[in-house]
Image (cartoon, rainbow, N blue to C red):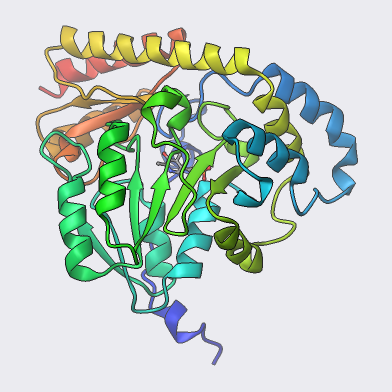
Length: 364
Ligand SMILES: *Cc1c(COP(=O)(O)O)cnc(C)c1O
């Protein structure tokens, strides 16, 4: 009998994300207003599209396995050596490499219960022991609780998303810096900054290159290239060499490399996306207020709107889906009584607002 390795057999079958394509197949819908995965409604930069289009005929060639042109440009952006950067096929890929590199089977890893799920997915997949602490009552990741757990349980990796998904909350520079300093120095902080591009640089943790810090960035959100699958990690040359040992050398799509590079040279587009996203958040805040609901101030491209109970949030999400509007709902308290909606274009926001008004009138 053919069986997978015992460690793999022991992994529970889970699907961290049910995609909108699957939901469309299940519900028989032919079109969805896609506001569920924090994809950019503003698309990729026109410069990226142009570069990728003209690169396409060379699809027969592998990409540069070192992604050196892109790493050079990223090094300039982050004022560091290219040797401190490793490119992966998105943060999800890099997170897997970090767990594989630093968490041996049985080792402890620490995260916030209900935060972005891929870290936990990899920890379980590599046989680590995942410990979780709750969010604060206001939906902010609880640095004090993480710190106390880190001191007590000796994790190899502490995962923190800042800004956080699904809450949208942001922990300011000084607080993150003192959290990082206070962590036991044999724990690695895996700082997921997928939404850093929506925050002023001056509010982010300053550039710090130490073995116990890995920062993750992506072209999936502000740069609007989620489908191209490309992101990067910033850390020390030593950690980057560790990643080099285990990463998939031709794992980066050639077209994604070219598009990412072109996007980095399109500041105008990035500013446009950041401004449009802020406008979308404001619209959602206003909508929530008009409907007499709370919402969480967000530093990302999505907003959580309060629905009172988890059951009601679930019902609202499902009702919206049946009307062709796809959003998501956080899974753990205190955010599980909220729905999370991504920043859309104006017509998408209008469609969401209209559908939500109707649904709330029904799901009373
Ligand atoms: C969207 C998201 C990711 C995924 O990034 P990819 O580069 O597309 O893999 C990672 N972390 C957080 C917090 C996210 O919201």
